[in-house]
Length: 189
Length: 169
Image 1 (cartoon, rainbow over the protein chains, first blue to last red):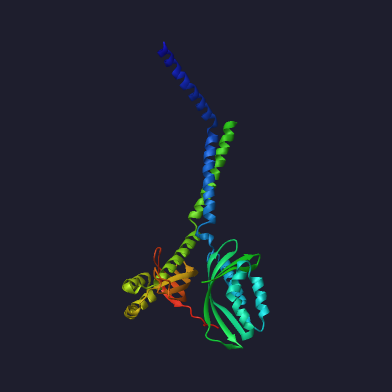
Image 2: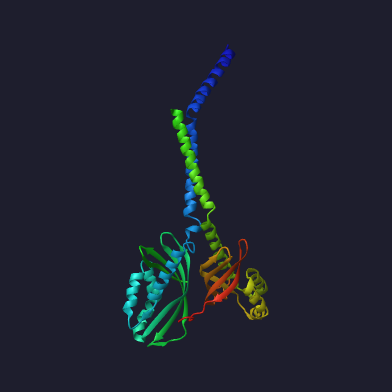
């Protein structure tokens, strides 16, 4: 008896869900395919976005020729202005510094340059800074640039050179907002 | 009806997949990406080479100088080769090792097709620096480094020009 029941019961239980799921698939398979394909496409699209915005080409140095030379010329000018000083006209340097330096750069400038400015009036000091070479380490699309500058500095006392020109190297971080470049960080290299 | 909507959805999903694939392919076959990757590669090589060319350990100067010849080419290699006997004599007298460190480097020109690049490098050379003691002195140098591509992905230093101050003041 019990064996008969088992034999009869098994095929019934198996067949019914099978039929139901087959019917389900027959009706809904396009939706399932669409969901799977869309999920794959979404993942691929995200990956493509990451690759496009990241990677080595996110650094635009020499890729965007225009912005590269624009950043170089502005940073060169700014560095020459804030590191050129004359005891006869200290205000013009101060004005340049307050308009061209911002954030951390302002205090870093003080520690690099403060002493010169303190000594200058008494010793009749002047300092002329020229950028002899400049190159970009980084240039981001948001307008942030990291620049290496090689400086030549000549100081004079009462109009006479105090010695040979001196070399100095700086790593300058600058940021462009609107049309103006401001130096945000200064570091001796 | 359900079938029709489903098929439209499949078509839309496939179109999206095609679009995503096209975008992805755009990042693979991308001129900018290749150029930027090679530009960064030149910079890294130049930095590594500048460290080597500014470091010498008198106890194994022969090996250091062989490395210099390995990483250089053209005029610089010729100059190093010519200077070899003099350098050997110099290093024989040198007591302590020198160790170079690149504090900043930037690629200022890079011609991918010609295989030429120029790199600015700011270098500090520590004298007498070894693992246990602090360096006894420090020298700051700066160079314009000419790099040349020898073969695919292999760059060597072709010229090394110290940028002396006062050239144009």
